[in-house]
Length: 244
Image 1 (cartoon, rainbow, N blue to C red):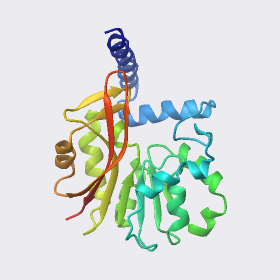
Image 2: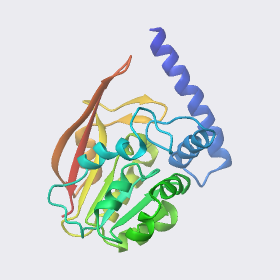
Image 3: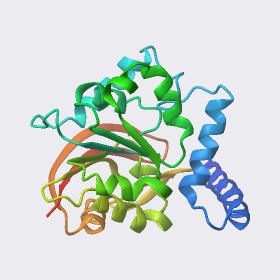
Image 4: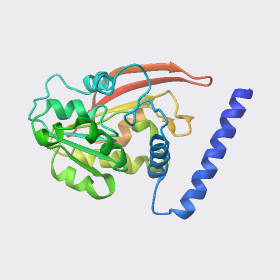
């Protein structure tokens, strides 16, 4: 009971800060608020699981993203295919696509540019050789959609999509992958009933994802990770949708 009370109290305090922030930033949504919060922590030197140059764990930066890259790499993806990453962060995963795909075949999008600027410093000469493109959602989404990606993917992004933003987020994915036969691959957190498991963590049902992505067809469900929290059992899966 104490764990539940502490968890709920923390969420109330966090949400109160967000609501105050929204009053001062009515044109911005939760994703901007949360991303800036994380970016400020990374800038201050805090170690993060997946963002920044200084990552948790014993693996170096390049090795750290290799496994996640492989789970988003379809076996039949040609090196000429155009790949768009949603929430590209500091390119921990995207760097491997940049390295694999032909020049000009990667487009990374995120809420802010601070993260991928870190990645660009790390990949060095690959930027000139492979000519990846980057941008923030508010002024580069349409450009990326006109570019007509063959694969759109997101890792550890859907869980951070606030319920008030979910319609816009999944509509954006479908806009980016509008090319006939294009695929959308996303890591999601799945539950029998929707619930919130953290300050910026939401799990949804498979039916919710199907509805949000309609008329795209769910063609594959791949297991990813499972872990326990004091309150919940979290199941992460990779869902693959195909454009009609």
